[in-house]
Each structure stands twice: as structure tokens, then as C-alpha cells.
Amino acid sequence: MPRANTGASDLRTASSFLAYFALVWWIWASQVAYNTRFRTRDWIHRIFSGTQFIIFCAMATFTSNFDIFQGIIRKEVPAPVGPVDFQLNNTSFDSVFSLNLREAQLPVINDKGIAVTMGCSRLLLFLQYLIVFTTAPSHPKSLRLHLITLLLSSITYFASIAFIGDHPSETSSILKICFWFAPMMLEIISHFAIARIKDHEYNSKSVAKRSATLFIVVLGEGLNQITGSFKYVVGAVGFTGRGLVIMLSAGVIIIGELSLYCRHNWRVDRCGPRRTLLWFFSHYLLMASLILTLQAVRYLLSFANLYSAITTLLAMADDIADKTYFGSVKSVTAGMFPDAENAFIDLGLPFDSFIGIVNTVLANPLNGTARTHLAQTLIYVASVTFNEFDAFPSPGSPLFNQTQTFLEAPFVDPNSVFTLLGDLITSRLQSAFWFWGVAGGSLIILASMSLMLRKPADKYETIGIIARFVFGAAFLGLTGLTVGHNVPYFANAASATTHLVVTRKPWNVASAAWV
Image (cartoon, rainbow, N blue to C red; front, side, top):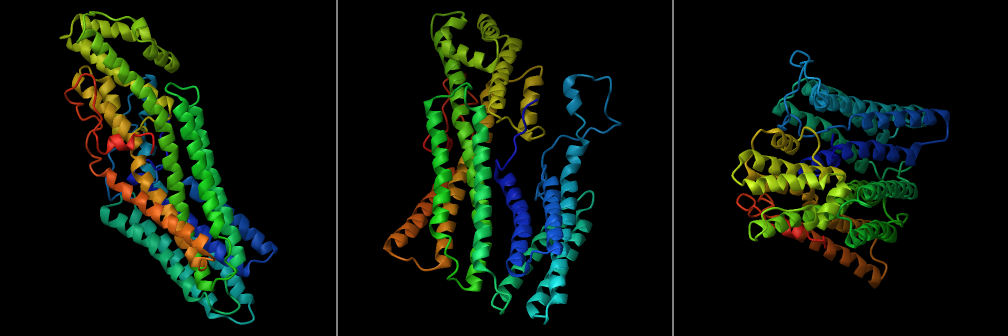
């Protein structure tokens, strides 16, 4: 079984991540806004802290297959196999994974669970403000406004369950999104409305300390994700010195993000309350762009070495063609292709068996069965290579189903093998397109947050901020290279048998090592 491909790997999953992260981040940010003003070291608040931890654990429960567009954009998934349809006389190993009833129900379960958890988090914060309200010498308007907005938020989140239902429609799914994020905006507005009320101002030093802690945690988790992908690289087929350089470049990105944040985002004691609040809430944009940048780095790091492995296999195909179709050789041996043989050994595949399949086709080029076997073998080898780098499409995805159908079909069009191979490559290369956008966005957000705090102290600081804006805009401009990314990866995939040509724009750019 292939390892599941998780994370923000395309626009849809990235959008779902941003929506989910906004909910989790607001649970944390709204609690920090309370703690910096009213939290005391007593048993009541310790109990609330433990309960808040349970809330975060509950949110983590509903991350699997979360899709913010559930019910709006229909996702192509195989029909779930129920107990009535399931045949016990099919006892093959693959049939164990056919009972995907839970997989089909997960998006709806996630939506309901998130709605309940968010409603409970708002009630928990409501109780904390209520205790302060009832014990305060006077009842300031700020507390009343917090109580009203939090009560409305909790009611709205619980009410959204009615729109989700068991089979959400497009209209109900849109209403669900409105019911999830409108209360969040209302709460944010209420914080700005009462930011300057005396005795309830936000402690800027405490806000900065907690924000820096979250930034380091997110950066550390991103580093963990990137270094975790190294185990699929070192010792694998296609690993070269260039891969080592790319690893070091990933480390430079991590250190650079940390240095840029620490350079200008710590002097918040000179800011007004609303400016401090704006700086604090802007961390969502920074954290989201940072996480997506690190995700893209992780995917691109894996792709750099995966591409070397695939290139080795394609070079073997070109070499076979040169020696047979365009030469005098009527059969081939394993010794003719030492690089490919080493690649097969690294993958744990018998190269002699593959050479036997090639010779069968060479002996009878018009034999459809032999050509089908060769085409399926090539895709099988490519699939093993992708799985070796934890890059194979996730089970149930359209590309996963397409590959499975190709490998199990009694007859396939040999000319379609390179089209499918190109689709497998592009599925992993999509991250190159949004890497430029989120990386540039993170630089612009860092520069903007520096200006939120104060004016530049000197000309050197001014130059540094301007440089971030310039380089951030340049990265955003590189997203123009993604125009035409719906074209096939190989320009001549439908007609060529060998010597494939990568579509010059945009795939040739996206797969370049400098990215």
C-alpha cells in the first residue's frame, strides 16, 4: 500500500488548511487576548487552561480529510462499498482496503465535530469573561461586549450543525462557512472597539512574548517536517550532491525566516493598544504563509531527488530506443544499462525481469499484449519510485484511481504511458507554483508588521524593510510563470515513444533546480 500523501499539496488542500488554521488560531489568539489582561494564577484559571488543552485536542481529532469545500465542489471519490455490496468471496489483500464507508463519511463528521468544538471553545471563553464580570468592582462596557459577542458566536457555531446535516447541499455548505467565520470577524471587531478602554488595555510585552513563542513553535514544526522528509532522500535512488545542496538551502530558509522575524518584531512596548492588536492579529497571515512556505519547501525538496530518479529511468528508455529502434541491436541485456540497473537495485526491483519484458516487445513489436505489459511495467516502476519518496497520490484521489485502473487493465494504449507519468510528476510539482506566492507573501507581511510597530529607527532599517517589500513583490511576480500549468508535462507525450520533451512553460521552469 502507498503511503498517504498529506499536507497542502494543491490549491484545494491549501485553502482547506487556511480555513482550518484560522479556526485553531482564533481559539488560541482570543485566549491570549484574555490572558494578557485578566488571567491570574489561581485554581479557576488552571482548570480553564486544562479545559482549553482538551479543546485543542478535540480540534486535532477532526483534521483527517477535512475539506472546507465539502458540498460546494464535488470531489471525485470512488463509491463507498457497503456491507450489502461487499463480497466475502473476494479475500485478496487489496480488497481489505475496499470498505471505505468511513472514508466517505469523514468530511461530514469533521464539519460537525469542528462546529461543536468551536461552540464549546466560545462557551469556555464566555465563562472566563463572566467570572471577571461578576467579580469586578464595576462592570465595564468592554466585558459586556465580550460576553455578547462570545454568546452569539457559540450559538452560531452550534446552529451551523443544522446546515451540515448528513448530506450537505451547496447552499447549506456556503451557509456553514458563513456561520463559521462571521462570528470570528465579529469578535475581532469587538477587540478593536474596546482596545483603548482604561484598565483593560492589552499588555504589549505579554502579547509579543506569546506571539514569538507561537512563531518558534510553528517554525520548529516546519523544520521537523522538512528534516523528516530527509529519510526518503538519503540512500534513495537519484540522490546526488545537488540534493545535499538543496537540503542546505532549505535550512537557510528556516534560519532566514527566524532572523527576519526577530530583527524588527520585538519592540512593541512603544505602540498604542490598537496598533499592538493589529500587529498581534496579523500573525495569522504570517503564520499561514510561513506554514505554506515550509510545506512547499518540503515538497520541492522531495521532488528534486524524485526527479533525478525519474530522469534516470527516462534516460534508460531513451538508451533502449537508440540501441534498438535506431540501431542494429535486436535485443538488449542488463549490462548495457548500468545506471538503470543500479536504480532498479536501489528500488528493490529485478532488472533482469524488466529486460526480459523489453526483449519480448522487441521480438514482436506488434503484439498488443506484450506492449501493454511493458507500458504497465514502466508505470509500476514509476509508482514504486514515487512511493519510495512518499510522493505517490493519496488513496482515493483521482490520480490514484487512474493509476490503479491503468495497472489492472487487460489492455492499455502504450502511447498513454507517458501522459500518465507526466500527471504523476505534476501532482508533486504543483507546490512550486504556490511556493513563490506564499514565500513572497511572508516577506511582505514581515515588512508590514515591522511598520505596524514603529517607524524605522535609521536608514539601515529602512533599507531592510524596503528590501523585503521588493523581494516579496518579485516572488509574487514569479507566479506569472504558472500561466498555462494545465498543459501536459510532456509536450509530446501522446505521440512519442522516447525522447520526451518537457513543456517549456511552465513545467520546465517549475522543475528547475534553482526553484
